[in-house]
Image: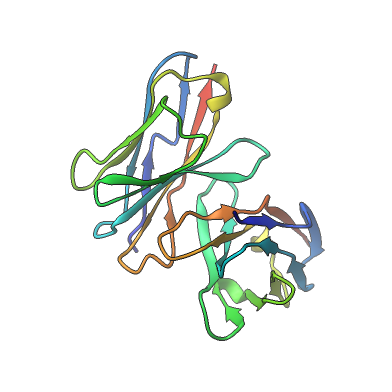
Length: 113
Length: 113
């Protein structure tokens, strides 16, 4: 069964460092998303991406964040200068042409120290 | 703006007993409704969704949910739980296909033998 894969599963980084979280969405999917879940809090929407551009972003998704689809298969989330409060589980998701359902990856746990 | 409230943060239940997880939402427009499950150390998996049509929706693993427009609710039920149903359950809404998901705070179900 096709699935969304995320790497790494866990990343520890020092405050102020740049991190790139990687996702391989389901092939032939057209819609791509990043969500995050701070420990003990709700899953929050960060950004959606369609047709090679951001279609919507939340207030959380400030200038420190960027997304890219560098080739036909990867979808990345970059945090330029990490802060302690960026520590969270980051989920990638993708949706097909009908896009009535988002398929989630296993998540990357980011720990900023 | 939409919001989702899951009234119970934790629900302990004995094996083979029924369980109901409550979800209420608010939205000024029609919504699509979803329940996701997160097993320990795994990503989010779709249990079921309501897009339109019959208000009783059947999902995987014996779960079902009923959409009640007048009460703005989408409660999840299972008549007889198994130990393997121990997980966190998230209710979510979106206002259209392709739109972001807004999640509730989650309900942690602990099935006891």
